[in-house]
Structure formats: structure tokens, C-alpha cells
Image (cartoon, rainbow, N blue to C red; front, side):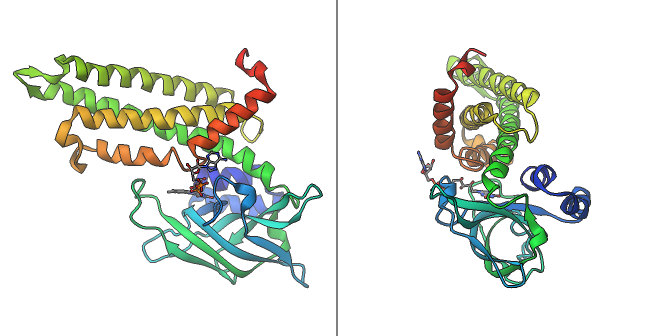
Length: 308
Ligand SMILES: Cc1cc2nc3c(=O)[nH]c(=O)nc-3n(C[C@H](O)[C@H](O)[C@H](O)COP(=O)(O)OP(=O)(O)OC[C@H]3O[C@@H](n4cnc5c(N)ncnc54)[C@H](O)[C@@H]3O)c2cc1C
């Protein structure tokens, strides 16, 4: 979230002053960044977000609303907020009746910016902090508008492409470790006087997992190789790889648990954590259903992509 959703986003969409002032701090780790798009009542339906910003008489922006599920929204157990957050908000309505969404930089210490709650008891990814953020008449100087008014959709879409590829790479790591663990265990564990790897049903778990792992790897590397960072219009493969990798990695982690029997179900043997972590990747950064929707829409517009 820090490097892809904040740093990469600002590097591609911010102006020279914003980059000069903030990038050194977030690159050195002095500041922790976050990106706040999702809300309690709007996730997949981004245009349904309600957080709004309006200008006051001094030319500042006044931000009101709540953001939900924000990675790095808190940075510790005491509820310390992120140092800087990219926030998407409504600033009006376009001629076609759609909301005008604009992008703002909110910094720790701005009046009206606070943490609503730290989200606890997540299924997985527990070493990553998640929080609800509250903006209550939060005052933002006009210099903290990123890009021009109404440009959020472009910022979001460009940034979601690299986010989805990065999340696919996480799935790839989960898949690799799961295959490694189940393969090792299958030689260590004996049943009916034989290594369990001699049983056909165990071989199905290992063989299928290997093939899926290699397919995730190839598609991830292929997408990374062809991706133009910050370029946009590469959604087919950023959605495609995240759709495939997230579910395949979850299935591989599930196979690892199954191969390891009862031991696979407890924390000491790692694979149950990999399964729990893998589940988030079917939801965060866009749900698998949203990827299916996007891919089908994009292939209608560009069927040539199938042949390229
Ligand atoms: C641990 C964690 C960290 C996160 N970090 C961040 C972050 O840093 N920043 C941020 O902005 N967000 C973050 N998110 C939010 C995440 O991006 C959203 O959860 C995700 O986009 C889904 O939104 P939702 O939860 O509101 O589900 P909803 O959009 O309400 O979806 C619910 C279900 O309906 C389905 N659905 C919705 N619309 C359609 C449709 N048109 N067609 C078919 N099915 C549909 C969905 O696929 C899903 O199955 C995080 C979430 C989690 C859990």
C-alpha cells in the first residue's frame, strides 16, 4: 500500500512541488503513506463514494466523509494515523450527471483528520494495519489537490493496474511457498508404511499445484514485462493476472493444508496462514467479480486483444 498505492500514485500524478516535498520522506520511510478510495458503503462501486470536498472562502478544501479498509490507515497499536493519505472525494457533478471525483493529499496534523477505528480480527494479512479514517471538516490547502479537478478516475485506474499486478505477485509468493511446504512434507510423512508422496491423490495435489504455480509465475512475469508504469489502458492483463493468481494461490494453499493433514491446519506449519492471506487477494484491490466484469467489457471493445 505504501509503495504502490501511495508512492507510485504520487510519483505519476503529483506536481513538482508535491513530489519534491513528499517523495523523499516516503521513500526514506520517514513517512508512511496510504490511499483511501473505499468507504463503508462503496467499494466496487467507486462512483458511489460519498466523501466530498468543497472550497471555503479562503480557497482551502473542506473534506467530509469516512473511508473504510484503509491499509496503513493506522501505523501502530495506539491508533497513530498514517503520515500522509491520498484521498478520493466528490467535488461536484459532471455534465453527464456522473460525479466529479478529485484527488487530495491529507497530512497528519490537518484539523479534522482522524482514525475512526483500527480494524481488528482480520482473517489474514494480520501484520498489515487496516483502519477506518474520518474526515470531519478537514481543512486541506489548495496546493494539496493532486492533478486537476475531476481527474481521480484516471489516477485510480492507472494506479489500480500496478496494484493488481503487485497483488498477483503476492499470490505468486504464496503459491511458491505452499508448493515448497507440501512437497517437503510429502517426503517426510509416512502412512501405511510409505511416503505419502507415493499416493495418487497426494500426487494430484502436488502436480496440479506445481502447474498452477508455474502458470501464475509466467502470467505475472509476462504482465510485468509488458506493463508501462503509469501508462494506463493495460487493464485486461492487470485484471487477468490478479483474477487468475488470487484464486489459484488460494487453491494451492488449500492443497498444501490437505497434504499436511492436521499439521497443515495449525500455525506452526505456516500453510494455514498462507491460505488466510491468499483470501484477501480475491477481495482487495478489486474483487474477482470486478475483474471478470472488466475483462468481459474490455474484450467486447477490443476483441483483437485475444489474437495479439
Ligand atoms: C484488508 C483490506 C485492506 C484494504 N485496503 C484498502 C486500501 O488501502 N484502500 C482502499 O481504498 N481500499 C482498501 N480495501 C477495500 C477493498 O478494495 C474493497 O473491500 C473491495 O474493493 C470490495 O469492496 P467492498 O468490500 O465494499 O465490497 P462490495 O463492493 O460491496 O462487494 C460485495 C460483493 O458484491 C460483488 N459485487 C459488487 N458489485 C458487483 C457487480 N457490479 N457485479 C458483480 N458483483 C459485484 C463483489 O464482487 C463482492 O463479491 C481493503 C480491503 C481489505 C479487506
